[in-house]
Length: 340
Image 1 (cartoon, rainbow, N blue to C red):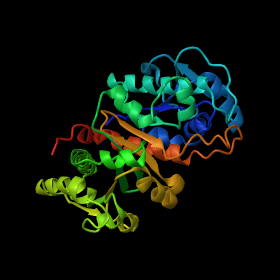
Image 2 (tube, rainbow, N blue to C red; image 1 turned 90 degrees about the vertical axis):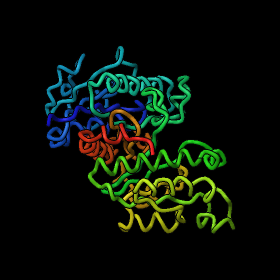
Image 3 (cartoon, rainbow, N blue to C red; image 1 turned 45 degrees about the vertical axis):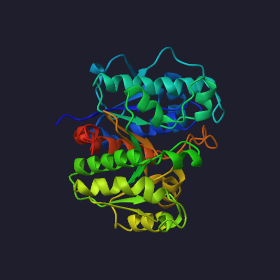
Image 4 (cartoon, rainbow, N blue to C red; image 1 turned 180 degrees about the horizontal axis):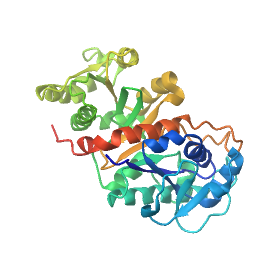
């Protein structure tokens, strides 16, 4: 099969995105054996990142269309959006940087809609900077869903063979509980099952976290688990999906880390993110299920505290590229998953 074509959006110009993009594309030549990689971003920012990281700006090659892609290991092929931007101060909120990060992502979505790329790999953006530029989105995932016109999607954290889905993400805990509906739970179980099939694991063990402590303890600590989650789980089981729950999250997630479960579905952002990041750190990536092309992101933020110092580690972005290349060939099985 031909190598998948992956676009790397360089994220917020004031953060570590440009630096880790440079290091990923120039310090890891074996990635080019797994995918055709190019950057969507800004020439000025990548030039500064090259100098900061000990590389020559001459290794940046501007391209105007994807027919020009050569995938040469010692070159950053850059698809630039508009004119080069003025330099922004590292580690500072900038509307210029926020607008640029947004536009880089929208361009990647356009290429995905046109079927010119097989996947999008995203360096981090800064939500405050993006809002300062007038783009009022909670984060990458919601922009991607909007641009691709999808309503059924889920954020996934992944490390190795472990995948952690989310029913809700960037919203208040109060609203998240209301939004963990039976319909939403069915949708995410279905996406999880589709991912398992794409990985040739149709019998993967899927565990659904409870909303309340002890998964409600049979209504002692709330009714949401039995009223909102349980009906969707029973429905999925009737379709021969190997899913169990709702189960206490403080037991389910440690068991999954030890290998008892292949896929976990968390109900809200911190229920999944906090334990995942505590265990896996830089060894995790962020995947979006429900899009027509695979999207994988680093599992960290813009790191303004170290931006411009040259010490940022590209580990998570390299993993994101590897995972996107791995998932892309079978991604249609996730994207075209049938409703339960």
